[in-house]
Length: 499
Image (cartoon, rainbow, N blue to C red):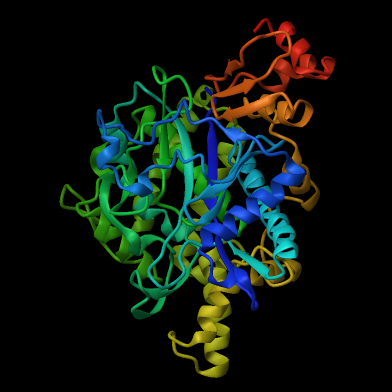
C-alpha cells in the first residue's frame, strides 16, 4: 500500500529599491512573478471544476455566501501555472505558492520542495529584471508583525479510517513534533510583542484544535475534505500545522514521521492515550520551551513531555514496520526514518545544540547566540530579526542557511544536480509523471489541469476531452511511459490510451 505525499509552500515576498512597485499590494508582485515565469514555462489554466474548498470532513459543506473570502481558494483571476515536473505554481492571496507533485517517499517530497525553492528564485530574478526593482523571496511563515502564511503537507488516507480517530490520535503528534521540525523564530506572540526566541514560526497562530479555516481561527487539524482522488476510497489530510524548512534533514523528518504515524493510526496501532487535554495551549508551550522539558497534560490525567509523546508515536511506528511491512511502499526508508527519529529525540534530551547541523531552529538559534554573546544583544535587537530573515532567503548569495551549507555545517540529503533535474522532470511513480510529461510534450494541447484530471484539445474531437486521473498511483512511468515516448502528438496518444 503506497503512501502519497505532497508539500505546498507559500513564500514571503518583498520589493526593495525605489520604484512604482513599492506602493503596490504584494498580490501584484506575486502575480508578476508567476506570470513572468510562465512566459518560459507555458501558461495554462487551473481547472477548479473538480474542487470545492468548503466541503468539511465532519459531514457538511459551508455555504459559499457565508464563507470567509480567504476560504475561497478556487479563484481563477490569479496567475496559475502547471509545470513540467508535475507541480503547480500560482498566486494564493498575496503570496507566490508552489505545490509540489505527488510523491511516495519522504525524500522525494523534500526533493521536489527544494526544486520549488529554485523555481521561485528563478521567477523572482526574471520579474526583478522586468520590474527594475529587486524582488526577494523568503521561505518563512511570518513577517514578525502579525501576518502568517503556511507551509502545508498533504497525506492521502483511506476513507474508511474514521476522521474522529485522526483528530484524537494525530493532534498530539503535530503538537509534539515541533522540536524536530520547527524553523525557529525571533519573537513571542503573533505580533512578536514579547522578546525571545521560540522553536517554531507558526505555533502562536493556532487558535483551535479542529476546523476548516486555514488563515483565520487556524486549527491544528484541518477538516477540508478535498481528496483530489476518488472520494469513495480516499481522503486527503491537509496539514497546516508545520513550518517551512530550509534544512533537508528537518523536512525529511517532518514529512516522513508524519506519514508513518498516519499509517500507524490507520492500522489502529496508536490508541487514544495520546490525546492532549489542551492542544492549543500545548502547541505554544512546546514552541516556547527551548529545553524541550515542559510537561503537557493528557486527557487521561497524565503529564508527558513533547519528546516522551513522540516516543509513544515512534513505538507505534516500530510495531507497524515490524508487524505489517507490506503496508509500506518504502520499508527501507521507513526503518531509516525511525532510527533517525529516535536518535534525534535522544539528542534533544541530551543537548539540542548537538543538532545544529540538522534542525533549522537549532541552527538559527546557534547563529543568534554567537552574535548575542559577542555583542551583548538582547532578544529584541533588530540584528537578530535580520538574521532570522536572512536565514530563510532562497537566494544562495544572501541566505545564511546556504552559507552554512557551503561551510559544511548543515547535513544534506540531496545533491544539486538532482534538484535541478526535479525542477523540470516529474516523479516517475505517481500520476504526476503523466501530468508533467503532457505539459512538456503537448503544451499547446493542454487547455487546463487539476490534480485529478487534464483537459485537452484533440483535433479529431469536436469537444474538449477531460482525462480523469483519480488514482494517484496510475499514470506512472511504468504505466504510460512507453506510450508517451511513442506518440509525438496528443491525438495519437489519446487513441493509444483508448480514451
